[in-house]
Image (cartoon, rainbow, N blue to C red; front, top):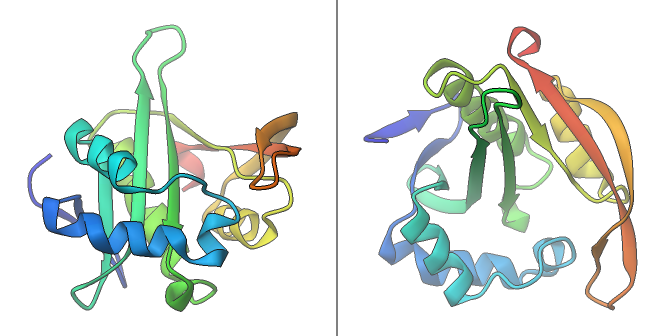
Length: 165
């Protein structure tokens, strides 16, 4: 992917080397670390090398990261996304714009017909964000992820079809 993806309020661009310290810093914020463990330098560098992660920018400042993956099996072809935003940008519509921008690119440029996302069931702000874009709940994933205290927690699977965006 060359260039950048422009939303109404955010720009998504491939993660660069100079983003690593800022993304690690955002990953340490309590409102991010609660849901995303292990956003450390090796994790961000793996995303940098994989080419499937975008820095989320607002007014030239890194606000978070959005990532995507693909299942290319012809019988099950679809993509999944995930993202985090620093606390300054949470609850202000930046997440919705980032999700919508990434979804549009995955549908229009990567040729997907369906996207998934799988937040923690207790992460109500994230779920509201995804549902505002058009994602629908399709299932509960019991004891899906381990929280920072080592306890298994439920997740929710949401999906979005291209015509629902």
